[in-house]
Image (cartoon, rainbow, N blue to C red; front, side, top):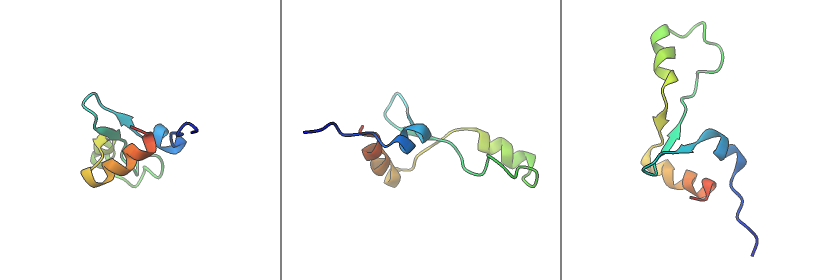
Length: 64
């Protein structure tokens, strides 16, 4: 049986924490930043965790 491949797009976007949760970056922080407030941009800098319902799907893509 062949090896199961990890989804390349997913491995670039998500990282696993030490406890097995999945870290993600916020959207809306790559361009068109002039119309966004400083507070909004500052809050988008921090990493977030993937919500429970999506976690199972992403773990399947990462072969975890």
